[in-house]
Image (cartoon, rainbow, N blue to C red; front, side, top):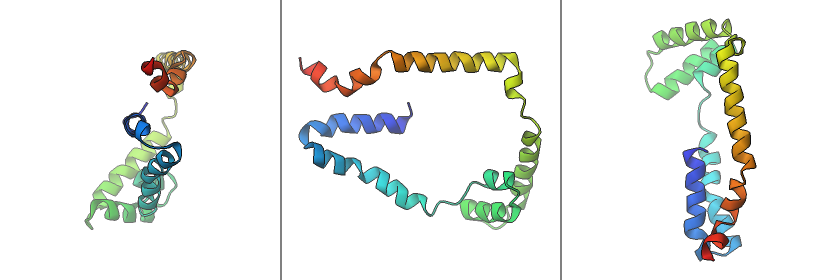
Length: 129
């Protein structure tokens, strides 16, 4: 789980017992709504734009993100990096990488099947007893 998700769960456990379900829902909506409002003005990633062959948009995005006009060297570095990585799509062809992915997927399935979500959802009831 990410730190943001864990902080959200912590917030629910801290303020949840003091609010009704309806009020807790409204309080919980504050962070996602703020994120949506701020996310509208966030520029697209220069790497994504380079992968889509939109070099001029990528440079404009870099100018907006860096706050300076001289970003052409960085844009050239990004372009070279993207071109090098477009040709290198063989990561899953390596046996060691496939094995690591399978181990990771098995661990994730084991975590989901262990019932930690049920314990998390009923933690207040479990710990009250």
